[in-house]
Amino acid sequence: MVVGAVLLGLTCPTSALAQAYQCSVPGRAVSVPPVTQEGPSRKTQISGYTLALSWSPEYCQMHKDNPRDWRQCSGKAGLFGFIVHGLWPEGSRHYPQYCSSPAPFLSGAEAARNLCMTPSARLLAHEWAKHGTCMARSPETYFKITRILWNSLRWPDFDRISRKKGLTAGDVRQAFADANPYWEVPHIGLVIDKKGWLEEMRLCYGTDFMPKACKAARFGPADSTPVKIWRGL
Image: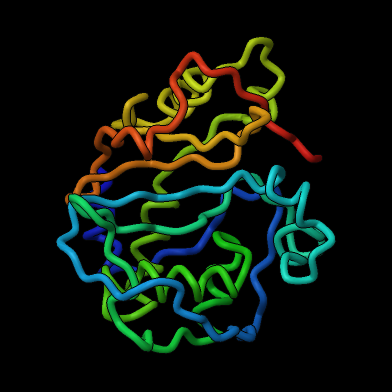
């Protein structure tokens, strides 16, 4: 069970493997940029969690020439499929954010450890400051929980799925559910842009870290909605 994996992983070391076509973790600490707080601090009771996963080929279509995105998009540090955007605590009415200001320091060594899961030190620092501080006292604990959830997932062949004629949001959700015990279509949210391209998958968890039905805002488009997946390879 996922909750069992989380509890076990808090006492046992885990590796930070990614759903990447190819990736290499730096052998040294990396530079972590400072984070600017965007929005108010908000401490509210946690009602669940969302693991937000970005489809990297789609993101890199528009960002491949941006120096800030070189690790994710240049191909020099890896070729990525889904990557972790962030693990977000949810609230009943408003989601908690920036629960410790300033946030405890994210070291360059801890950032480097996670770069095959989230290939951006800037994004890691942002997610820790905005979301992680509402879940854990240290970035090491926050990212350890994130890695455990991430490494528990199994991935169908999205390159093959992208070639299916008449592909729908329901097809994408069902393919993921078929590959992962405990996951069902109502647990799997999607973000699709205005032109129908898949941008993100958002997996919904309860406070016990078991899959649960997503709220409408997290679930996204109806299962019948046409979807396109940019392969980018």
